[in-house]
Length: 150
Image (cartoon, rainbow, N blue to C red; front, side):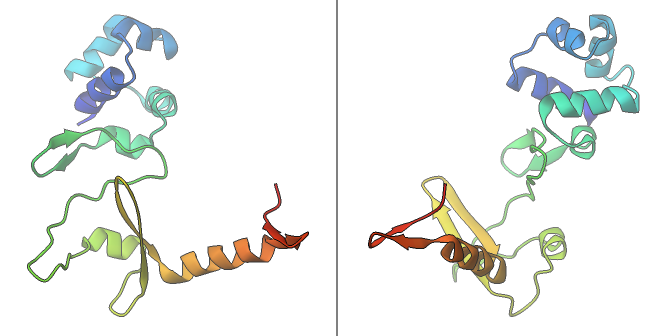
């Protein structure tokens, strides 16, 4: 719910209720009522809060829960938290339907698996290949060395 997200985001960003109220030009008491659930902000105040925290209004007003963790903070704009999956005995996972729909993933679609020290990411192969092709197009050979333009 909105009140949970307001408290989580305020604490993550290290604001007191007073500081946050000043940032969006309201009284501390008005903000405290939002966080307690006694009242809710109008759409303009939601816009200010979403901008301040770098989240969408939609993610600000809905609560996301992850099994084993509980309520999690809204994801930054352009990012999503789709929930968790379980790896089966064959090493397979089922990608949630909402993700499959959002990225037009269907049977036979190729994905590139990327990783860093924190985890893995799946990217549609054609998007990855198009990005790599554009990087290679910008690459040029200067004095026998491959360089990328600055």
